[in-house]
Amino acid sequence: MKKTVAYTGNEAVAFGMKQINPDVVAAYPITPQTEIVQIFSNFVADGLVDTEFVTVESEHSAMSAVIGAAAAGARSMTATSSAGLAYMHEVVYIAASMRLPIVMQVVNRALSGPINIHCDHSDAMGERDSGWIQIYAENAQEAYDNLLQAHRIAEHPDVMLPVMVCMDGFIISHALENIELNDDAFVQDFVGSYQPDHYLLDVENPLTVGPLDMFDYYFEHKRHQAEAMRKAKQVIIDVGKAYGEKTNRSYGLYETYQLADAETAIVVMGSTAGTAKAVVNELRKQGQKVGLLKLRSFRPFPHQELAQELQHLKAIAVLDRADSFNAFGAPLFTQTRAALYDLPDRPQMINYIYGLGGRDCDLSQIGQVYQDLQQVVAQGHGGEIVRYLGVRE
Amino acid sequence: MAEYLEIRWHGRGGQGAKTAALLLGESAAAAGKYIQAFPEYGPERMGAPVVAYNRISDEPITVHCNVQEPKYVAVLDSTFVGSVNFTDGMPDDGVLIINTEVSPAEMRETLGLGDSAIQVFTVDANKISLECIGRAIPNTPMMGALIKATGLLKLEDLLEDTERKLAKKFRNRPEVIQGNLKAIRRAYEEVRG
Image (tube, rainbow over all chains, first blue to last red; front, side, top):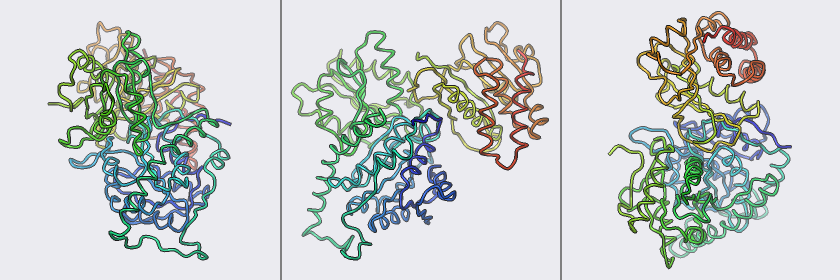
């Protein structure tokens, strides 16, 4: 039975965690934490889950605790945001290199300073090379759906990597929207039980985890991580398709919107994709051939697929909700541009840094981007390649 | 642009503007609508200006930006008069509902809306909430006034859904639930246009 409710993103994700019923959750209420673990702790207190809820003294310890639990063989989760994720940074890498299939909900928010706890993607971008899979959501429904798929991706034998499930702070996390919930039985069946091959509490087969790994093997282990991330791509596709068969909500590495016959397009992640869809609809009514590609899987980055999907365009604007100061483009742009470099007839590409610290990205800003793209097409060159959207200059 | 109705709530921290937006959104969702409800988070302290929004539609809503053209605006605190432009972005057929003891005609004059087609409604939600709930928390009566002025939802649907929502929060304080329901009903009856 499907059930439609009005939930905030935080409520949707906490409810998803309840349905997953993980073995261990560890969290710390740093500012800014999210309501997710607070709501989840109510489920624990009410006896609605079997989870061992570990209250720790910092975000660094929260990640360390879920690493310990995952190494012991437990299905482990946590949630964090902004400075909390930054504080975890050291151990975030350890989770990935120990190949522990931890799932972490990240509510994307700015990093200080100046002090700001509103939406941007700077926090997750700081972990983009940590070896975690990163999946982004457009709305509360996708945040919930992505969370329910995360364990199957993380725990797949070809992958065995931790997953960050990302949603936009406040814009999605604190906003109420309609969402369709799955029933508990479906979730439990879809997520399945977790049977690790190797784990610390398997006393019949003792093993060492996290040992010293010098120049003789460290590099090979890094190479294995890269290979696991490459293989994760197919697993994300397969899991998203299997999820869709049961829920009618299928997922892939990205979503295209009015892209097939488009001449110009925006590439973007997160909630702004929804705003851009409304602008695409309006411009299409006026006869403009505009489209959109919303990236869901930032890590692994589907570079061949993006080159295929975007090759026919005349000009592309990539929107980044984070900056990489003076790196000639922010992360999503530089990667997308690199992915298209080998095309024989590659589109013009420009980058917009937008929405930092929760700056509203409205319909007129997106409209401006499509208008700028027309100008790029007319001129035959990108002009100023890296631009800022909605900022006072 | 897209086919959705936008509502803006003006209040001060502690008056429940955000809660009103959430409760109204939940009631509209329960009535089968697609909805959004979200506050504009600023410095969170008692008395500071707070803005919250709703979008309501028969179609799925994809936009995720602030509300810019609200057809309905609800003002929970009349001390904003003169410092906040409530009608900012409102269309000509907009409806403005203000928590104040003065008449709609008087408020219309104070706001300089003489020739405007915007309809102005007033309700003394402070008095109603003081008498019904025991505290000046004008958010729930303002929901009653808003649905009367706009015909957005049926009173019985709003009462039923609000009761269900408040029952979770005030499990052990049934008088708070009943007080809020009474306040919604009174504001629905007493709002002037």
